[in-house]
Image (cartoon, rainbow, N blue to C red; front, top):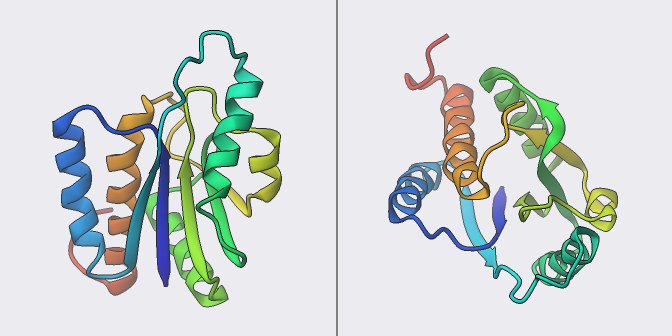
Length: 157
């Protein structure tokens, strides 16, 4: 299954980028994974949060294709254990979408249009994380889910 990870804004911290890249390389043993970065908006001082989210939506939608299964990383999304995420991934793979697209939003989250387009919302925690930190957490959890599905010795209960 093809997977696309979209994030708003680039990762400025080289350590976070390196950790994300490490887990992406591991994940690519199981899935075809691509990444895309929507550049952070410039000159946002005069924009309210809803306008900023609307502009981010327009840029995100340029990366989407018909048939994509869109999953938003959202604080109000479903909280799953690692084993539950593995089962969720298996169900998604069995449904055979064209692409599974995970989206990490900007500082204000997502527009109503993005919520309407999403098939699912997932939360990595009830805690709030810097959007840069979400990247390695998500990729590691996807890697963990794939090792669980394959019965490989990475995850410990």
